[in-house]
Length: 385
Image (cartoon, rainbow, N blue to C red):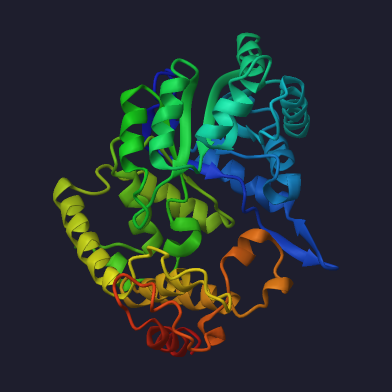
């Protein structure tokens, strides 16, 4: 395992972090049951392989993630760095502390190494966090008492707002957790800013939430190295960014732990020449993808509920990036009627292209003058096969 100094904390962290949100489970009587014994075995195997950063949250694995992490590291607390999160639901410092106490109880620990304001944006920071007797003032007091060793935040807002939060919280945050991967580089400049300001940088979704975990000869062949899998290529790309300290991986088998640990042990995961080659290929692929759809969303909303940009994005994953298994699986989920889907995130993805009735309302709004109806039919034929 390779290590890196984590911002200004003085700590050395493993390049691979364990994202504790995908522990092995099974369905028993219609209920999800998590395999605690196997999950603990995985966590301890990760420690054996040199991983020392473990990231959990109150909602992961139906609240069982923190419990399993606590059981796994009983008697070996000083060997690991534990990260968890506080879902900022309001501006109350008291409520912030109650949520923290719940995490400490589940973990069966008396302190947390990296405590995150969970999934915040700039507006959250200004209106609910940095307010009189709010979560920030309470967190600073608890940091002074040693209950929270370091304060952090995880982020899903616009890239420029990450920079603004770091500026506003100058001297407050030790690290930031954000999205970044081979096919989503929107946060690249913000990550560089965070590193420049002395924050540790942790990356979630290095394999794109599983998208880059499916086979693709296109992505695996971006460099001439003998790359075992698409996931390995994606992990190498993230670790090759000098501004990144940790790549978090949500692993659910011992084999995944061992494979990812072996990648994180490689010195010089990608050369500068290889990174430049990847840049050129990604730019060309982006140009090709935009011939079919730029994702501007001017065509929306579709009166039939088809999420046209999302459907075309899946087609580009198949056609341009070779991520066919992922694209077909995701496309199949769009066939489920909206009222049968479990949550708003699923419903926001809209319906598949078979719901298109050819009204061409979308084509009148498309700045590229694309033949959207024809492309939707072609997409449905290809991805539903």
